[in-house]
Image (cartoon, rainbow, N blue to C red; front, side, top):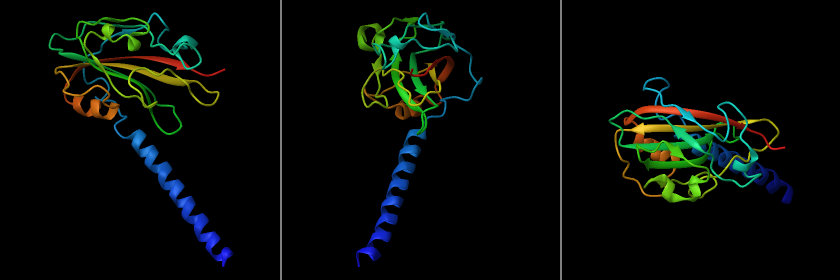
Length: 195
């Protein structure tokens, strides 16, 4: 009797695990596409004194260091900009894109986010921080599995509206609210691999 029940039970557990993994993948992938199609809006310039575009992110800004948010500089957005949104994610994560930082309703006059801005809300000039995939509000630095470099996209969106969203909103909620309101965007890419 035990043998007859054993095989169907193992099959049932296997199917449950597969369905759970598929659900996690779909949840992570849902809303992870860029908010606008590439090159359909004017470009913002996003740079950092913490690392060069396409360069390695120093450990100080990762889980292997102090885990502080890096410095970011943003060029002037179009005059009709009402707010800025920042989304940082890792599309190389095993289960789909992993969100490291969401900030929205940043002032359009904000041209410099200093190092550690995520931990000092006053530097966000009234902006709100969303929930990342570490399940906390604010910045969570790179902490990739494996020994291959992951790409971290720091995207800034200039919006023609102020998002009516609460602190702690997720990337997918922010992206949905921002759709159709992006008047410019820019990105900075950094790489990181754990040693």
